[in-house]
Length: 368
Ligand code: AMP
Image (cartoon, rainbow, N blue to C red; front, side, top):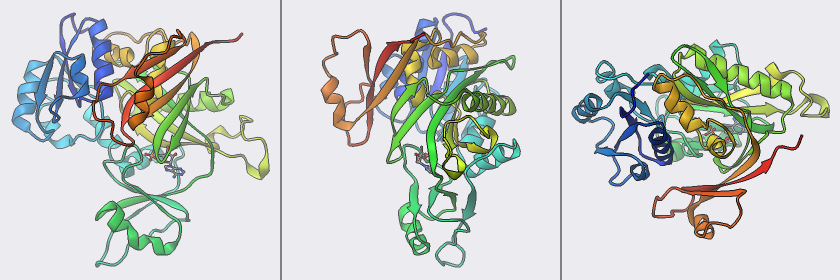
């Protein structure tokens, strides 16, 4: 177990890094942020900042020598430069988790090899300067292999002719195309795995996206327990297969039932619960665990990477969360006089349209 007063190095300095730093502080650790921005939000709670690009090996080496463990708060970090520091300081979760989860094709094949379902997919690239061919049923989501988040790096292909627009919209490829599935519900499972291989899941969280960005999250998910249990087992298997240490989030689609039968009936979980995406980290959908769980996702991650045993994820309340995008944050500048509403503002400054500026959580007692 990392002794009190040790320093956790965090790659990335956004709101996830900030909330990880707050949790680390409560557990007696300091944080050192490695991020290219001048004044990253995470610095509101962290002790040190190295301002450098993720490909700056000299700066990465100095950083690695100055901290006791390294973690990351987002997955779009090049793996190669990190290989140069992995023998200087332990990195949790491992580079295997990072490498698979930052590349949509590797991620899909990984899930397939685990014998779990994902959305049907196909790879496409430009050959001989011709428009790419997508061997897949339409409509389909075409996505860049890397750097996809908050709906970025995606384009919906509605008819064959649209394929000509793909290079202009998404760069030169290659890309992955996925069948646009008709889901009943999107949801996420946040799981943690410790250094001894124990795993613990939070309850499933129902998620609602707009334009590819998470807008709302709700717990309990309202899903039939068969679906929830199957998804939790899948998330734990994924964490185990990756030998992941720390928190990991799996986003799922629950497909509609066949022949118009009741969608939420708990049947055929293994055929209807599809893995959409894996994030090797704490996740926006799990923010509400801060208000309602004994150990929230941020503390759980810090505990796991610092060699503690995992905390209790029991939920003491119901909750829903709404993200504050761009200007919406202005409506919440004055905290509401209601103990059941908790506003978190990330201190990012400029409220650009669509930028995640904060979130609000409403809590409610669990009715028995
Ligand atoms: P992603 O970043 O790939 O998770 O995509 C963001 C959001 O776009 C998802 O949460 C879904 O709401 C939607 N989406 C992405 N891929 C698909 C798909 N294959 N079928 C239906 N909706 C999708």
